[in-house]
Image (cartoon, rainbow, N blue to C red; front, top):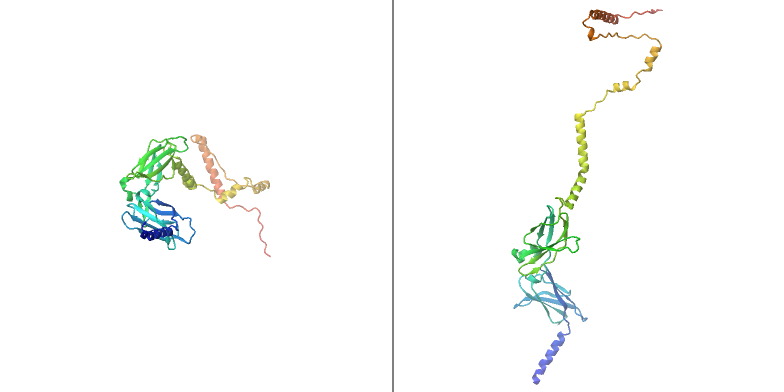
Length: 342
């Protein structure tokens, strides 16, 4: 070996030995959901001094750009990386002035990010039919929210849905493709509970999103499902006191109009409350007091044409006239005791 090469070899050995003293970050990985992305890693098994980390990225052929500098945590938010394109992301360990080697990882946001499930709603209308509503998952970007179709294109985002009968062992799962926000599912069994799940599908990338939580709903039976029946019963129970009050009010109003109440005057009530034969009347009769009565003559209609009836009529008139004169004549005082003046 040329003696002049030894200094270079010694310098190279010293360089690698210095850099080799700081180990690299371990288990470097990406976690990206709806373009919200973090680079994560585990700290190396190294106890010399306080460790920090630096994260950089670049597009192929360009210079690296810092994302996190000398951070003491084991993750870095790299969501600021542009969505379109493929990038190299790297991280290294730093202890004071010593540094480890870079650990590189490739990141393509469009294909690497996880697509969250859509929101699924279902309504049971006619027997054996469900109407399903799909709401696009949203992406938070620059303080605003955008539909996933804003990034992948309206014609390249569809949804897959699977539907099965609840609590039916071995029941075959049925798959349905949905291209619009609404889908009608016919030919279902009436009065049966079905469960639904949906996921986004990116046609251009042949990429599936996560499945939504299972939504279970019962189809209608004769036009009314159990949920609607429950709502109707609760509504009737809530309105029952008001309905009873209105019925009672209408009954009282009708009774007042068509069957009014009548009350006897107070003096009639007092008279009827006493016995028919009072003690005063019995006492007067027992003392033999003279009572005066009106004379009543009853004539029958059948005897009006007879001579006898004419005679009876004349006698009746005379008797009535005599009774009237007697009532108008002042009564004679049988016992009169004159006043004696002293």
